Length: 565
Image 1 (cartoon, rainbow, N blue to C red):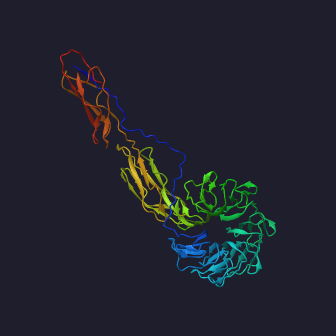
Image 2 (cartoon, one colour):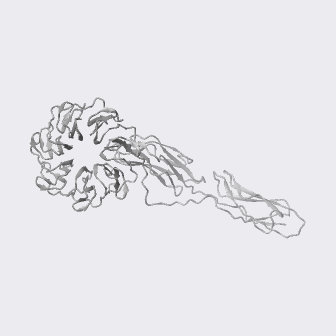
Image 3 (cartoon, rainbow, N blue to C red):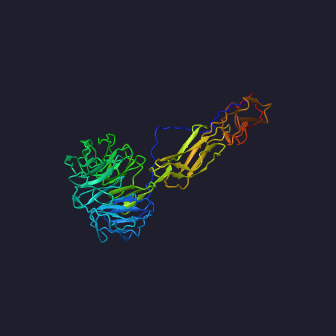
């Protein structure tokens, strides 16, 4: 008679998941997307300004835009097509453009005529592009920069020595009708390249000058509202300043050809505190000229110029910086020539103009537009257990002045309302922000279901374009894993014939089949004294038991009790 002991070695029924949590997340690799905007300009673009109606003004040294003759200035529709009704026709280069609150357009440069009308280096256009006949300041040399004050008065800087026949060395202020503000006379001794107005009305100027009003001020100065020198402000750049931009916090970004500020090394770009002292934490380190700076509403900073590296990293002619001056690694349009002008559209898209003919290898002659993109910050995540929440984050490539909404659909093996609940579509990313989130709240139940997934797929967003990571898979870890054991520890056959059944039993029903491998040992010989169902035992989904059958072989040998373990 065989005495059979039911001793079975089990392997694990479910795989073990190793979760590793990091304290940092890498930035998503945003693609630099060019939309259908391709005006095709035949020579350099110096200035780009978006009008309130979405049309785009460009100025430079070109004579043709999109196959149409446009001398030095043009207006584009939002899609990049030339505005056929707008043709001021300047005879020489346009360096600067500013739009007044009434929609009229100020232009400065080296031109001396617009169409058949004499206008020396500065003019005002009506909204249709015709020359404003009442406005004629008459600068004696190039106008490089124009800024409009909140009171409507107009600041101009450049290489001129007179305005309207009156001595005004390189900087002047005009009344709203174009007449000279006779009370304002800072007197920079050489060229002014850039002007910016602070929120308190004080005026920043940058250029080639080394004195203002007879006082030493090397390439950058701040004026009081009356034009007198702010004696408390003296950054002292050792080379030309070409661009100025104000941050929302009042700090001042400067770009140009300099290599030091107040004796401290700063290559071509620097940030000043509100008092003019150097921000010592900010040091992007460009290897060549910075021509244009645009401070974004999210704190990031766009820069364009003749540089090809920032720090030790290749960045050809255009780059984006974090607020601390470090490089945004995901942003790399890779222009093939100098970038002279940068502008943010109201929808968050980035306009860039200059000498380049391609962006990321795609033809874009002297002007391009980079789309604002959105994607998930990661493609997947897994919950640590069957409870709590998971957050899925949508991120823009830059902050927008518009609210961005991102619809999404939900699929996967988990059941909404039973296994989890989720924030309703769409995600809203507020103006000025770069992220929006979806929260998945996991429902803890007593069912054994294994890993289940919630798959979120982005649909077409409003005010942005889809980037690459548009599908996110969230995996819910089941914490209701059943246990398995034999229903008894041993049994004995009545004689040396027939069968014996060994039963494996789960602690609870599961919606998945469970396989239970086993090994066989003992004193009885498999194939001689008995045969047995092959390993493993399978317990079907919805059942709690599975069996192995031992078929005993009767023989005439006396062997005593034998065991199958």
